[in-house]
Length: 211
Image 1 (cartoon, rainbow, N blue to C red):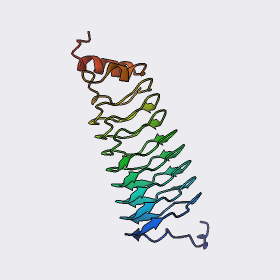
Image 2: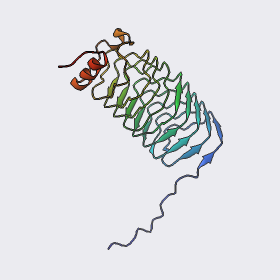
Image 3: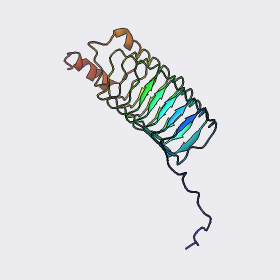
């Protein structure tokens, strides 16, 4: 049996609670292991941040730039995001349960896996974003624009989808049981791609008898 490695391992940073950070420059920072609770971040630069396992609970992010960030298994639970930018951000297996996003920009955002249930994206512009295999149960997407977005294998059960626009979106493999085809503007679904199972479900929901 090999001898134990005597090299000391770096400990995770100490948790931070109740602090306010304004204008801090976190450009390119590794966020691995960070833990913040009930903290406020104003106009901070998180461009090109990386890392995994960071935890942010009940925090407020206002004017924060997450551009080109690459975050894995990072939790933003019950947080509030206002006027934040997620340009070309990649969020892999992240968790944002109960968080709200108000007046944020999501150009080229990529979300893979993770739990985003009970989130709120009112009137969000998610055009051309990628949401692959994401759990978004009971998410509020009312009035959101998902035109040309890739929303594949995503759980939208119980989601609020009134007024959502899905023109030319790829919806294959996603749970669309909350989509009310009776009330949705037909132009909002023009060109959207669905699979045969979804097509049957939508037809049944509209009252058709599938033989």
